[in-house]
Image (cartoon, rainbow, N blue to C red; front, side):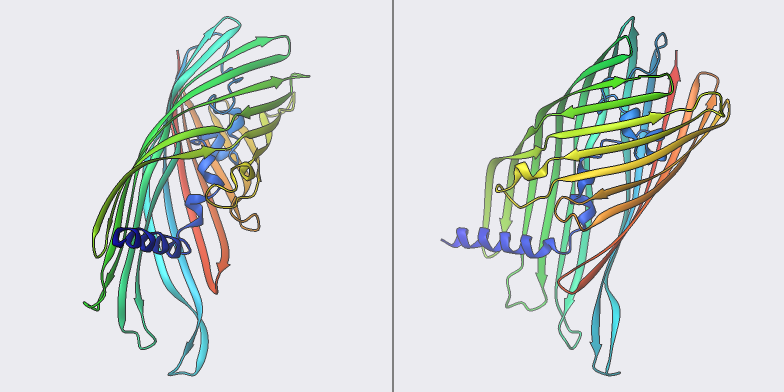
Amino acid sequence: MKKILIVALMIVLSVTAFSYTSLYNFSSGELNTPLYGKGAGSGNSEIFYNPALNPSLMFSKDRYYVAVGFYGISHRETHSQYIFDTYDNTVGKKNIYDNSFLYGEPSYIMGYMPLGAVSLSLGYENLISKDYTYNKTYRDDNYVILYDESEASIGNINGYFLSVSYAVWKIKAGINLSILQGDGTNEYSVIYVDPAKTDSSYSIDEQYSGVRAGAAITYSPVASLEIVGLYHMQTIVKNSVGADYTGTDTLSLSYDTDYILPNTVGLGLKYSPINRMPSSLMLNAVYERWTELNGAKTEYNDIIKYSAGVTHELTPSTTLLYGILYEPYKKNNQIADVGFTCGLTLKISQAEFTVSGQYRHLNYDEENTFYTERVLRIVGDVSILF
């Protein structure tokens, strides 16, 4: 009975901690496949650069191609409340929490091989990544410390993919298969100042595995226009969990659960005016059907992510990138990331270097607490044609 009470207590603590957990890490960004440099700079126009997302991509008809990408994220989260100051007899909005962190890692490695009318893309991509820390000291009305609460969640799911595309007439069609693997940890603790109260904590280790598949078609009615449609099927990622709960007693559990990626449909338009300074306008919309997962753990909303981007060739070796994006959250469609992007591509002989930046800012409130999140994402890659 005591062990059951410990587990129940840890679940309650986890739920209460959620309101202080960055929405960004549990947003539609979960399915933002690793940003290729050009896609990142042009408003997340991944449909036209990522062969794992759009397997109908054909980069060149007669050249081999390899690329390596990386990304880094600077994240700052602040919480504020309207607080009554008993000394000044005033009410003011004050920060009660300020957290920031920085992390980065490789985003993808890719090789491309043209084989006549058929082309192959294969490689590695960091499909889902989480890196979140939270620390807060709680005080009473007299500012006396009551307890410290902390949480750290780190992990990723990587995809090892093969995409095959075939061109005929004005159509390019492709299929994709990705083997998914990953791991993660979650550490949580509450430490009380009062020795009469029992400190509590839990430690969770996760191991992910699964297979994801998709298909896409690109149609070019005229040379200046590309229309892309894509679909990725719902994917069940198996998660093997090992958990240790510590309170008045220690309990260790092992169990399996599912992490589900929903059905996804995307549409992209790319227009490149003829007889003008080389440039392209890209419009994207991606629909994620999260409501099909409702009833298992929580209630979600379906979302549609929009983006628009432009690539503009300043010189034969220099291309400017810029764009905007709008991505609502599956837990609350009234909250959305609005981002601005820019980037630069340089060509030197057979090599191409791209560096892009994205800035996102959002505000939301929950239970009289006002949240602000600022995210700066730097994305880059190096590619070589052989």
